[in-house]
Length: 256
Image (cartoon, rainbow, N blue to C red; front, side, top):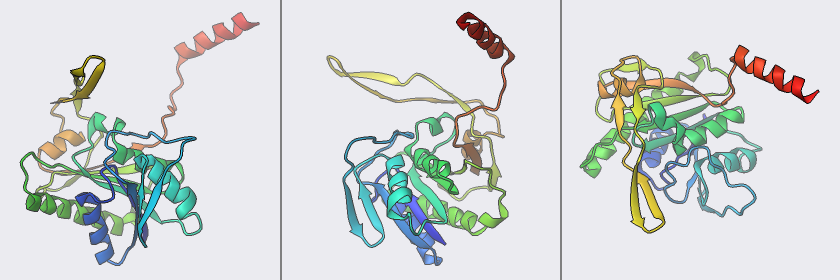
């Protein structure tokens, strides 16, 4: 299978290098188009009407001075427009993307751009605990990459909703199992605001408050499972609101 890899941790990140190696070892043709440096928290941000420098690192790797979504767009619209990939995988992210995280995740952003362009897309993330040695991190990425490879091998058995992405979160250690879970499971507190100097601030230190619902991805991972979920790439809602309709009717009447 011809596979495009993107991420938000950079083209040299251990996660994407590990995933590329595992997929290539099992016969897949893998191409990497990823940021030249870490671009975490970029969500679906894209660079419009400004130059985006790109460096060809080798026959299968492009380093992009842009966002994760830029990487997916450049690859699918330009680099591989004549020979498009059969699948786009974003990751493996250095840290989970569960619950509200997916709204901020550049990993999910790259997969979302691919899904909106009509491609099957997977976002993959792994939990890395503080204080992990490089060897322990490598083992965590190897486990997540192997799970991803097994999912890729069974893609034809999955009924894939249009414009949705598959979101995989791995606990890092050998999981108790794999479950399908809702992308939900905690409330996010307002991020800590740090004053660096007058009129200069930094946000960080967001805290997850787990609701303890085993059907949700954050709880599933905390309980030792790998969690897989579908996420909608489109932000439109199929809901019809009678109250909104009444307001619109009144607005239309006022315009007459």
